[in-house]
Image 1 (cartoon, rainbow, N blue to C red):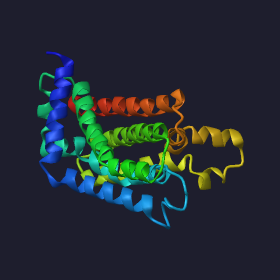
Image 2 (cartoon, rainbow, N blue to C red):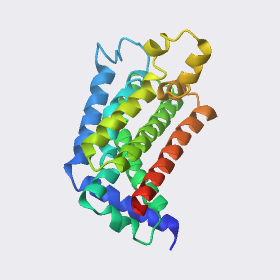
Image 3 (tube, helix red, strand yellow):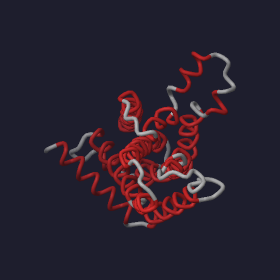
Image 4 (cartoon, rainbow, N blue to C red):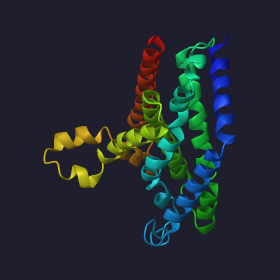
Length: 246
C-alpha cells in the first residue's frame, strides 16, 4: 500500500478526532482571544504606540503562547492511545510506526496552521490602518508555524513516554521553556563568555524566530526548526519501538 496514503489516512483520522471534541474549538478561541488582546493591549502589545503598520506586536508573543497551547494540543497524541490500549492495535495495522508518527504529527500541525490562518482579521486590520510590508508579515507567519511544529514535535516525545496527558503536558512545557530561555536576553546576559552565549542561543527558538519576524528567511533558521522536528520525531519512533518490543 502507498505509504503516503497510509499517512494521509492517519492524518484525517486525527483531524477528525480533534474536531469531534471541544478541545479544538477551545484551543482556537483561546488562541484568537490571546492574539487579539496581546496585540492591541496598550500595556503589552503597544500596537498603536509603535506608530507603524506591522504585526510585530502580534508575533513577539507567539513563543509564549505556544509554550502552553501547543503542549495542550500534543499531549494526547500518544498518551491517549497508551491509556486506552489502542496503541498496540494501531502498531499492528499494515502501517509502519513511522507512518503513524508522521500522520499524527501532520494532523496536529495542520490544526495549528488553521488556528494561525484564523488570525487573518489582524492582517486585514493592519492593512486598513496603514501600508505594512506584507512580505515581512508572511515571513512571520511561516516562522510562527515552524516554531509551533518544533514545540509540537517535542510534545510528541513526551506524549509517547507516558500514559498521562497531564504528565506529558508538564514535561513538554518544561522542555519548550528551555527552548525559549536558552536565547532569552535576561538569561544570556548572565553568561560572561561570548562563545558560550552563542552556543546556548543557537538552541533557542527565540534566536531563530527573530529573523522570521524581521522578514529574513535565513536557511540556518529553517534548518534549525526542521532539525528539531526531525530529531524529535525520530526519538518518538525509538520510544514507540521500545514499547512495541516490550
